[in-house]
Image (cartoon, rainbow, N blue to C red; front, side):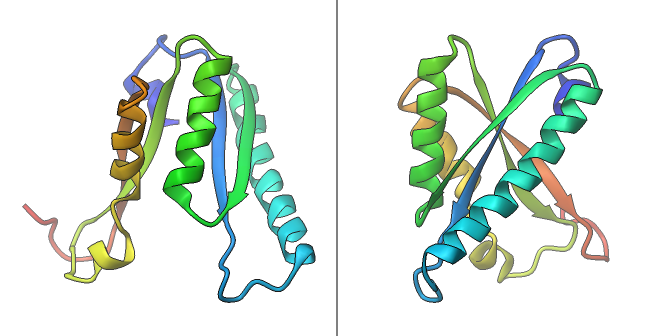
Amino acid sequence: MSIFRNFPDLYHNVIFVSVSVIDSGVFKGSDEIENLKKKTEESLKKYVNLANKLGFSSDYRYVVGTDVVECATKLCVDLSNEFSHITVFTGQITFTLEKFYHKLLHNETAFAIQRRLQMYGIMTVVLPVKIDTGGKQNE
């Protein structure tokens, strides 16, 4: 909920968005998709309930697919057609002690989504999600 701390009194409605990724290499049928949908909905409902308790009107949307950037972009574009003024917030993992393999494992998905949404004129803000890996913070 750092959005509300950083942007007080600016946002009053929240829609939590999620893309559940199907790994085609280990895909085991329609039961797996249903389980993925159920887990995604349960997780999103927790966020909606928290936002409601904090006094914000909220809802959720999700999609199941194989390409996070493509699915997230389509979902956000659809939301921009449903609601007149939206701001999309994404998270980018940052590490206190970054290793060479972090960018390989934790790619630039948030920035790829931001670039695509900019083509539609959709305001997108990338927020840092700090992961403490010990050691001194990189300068």
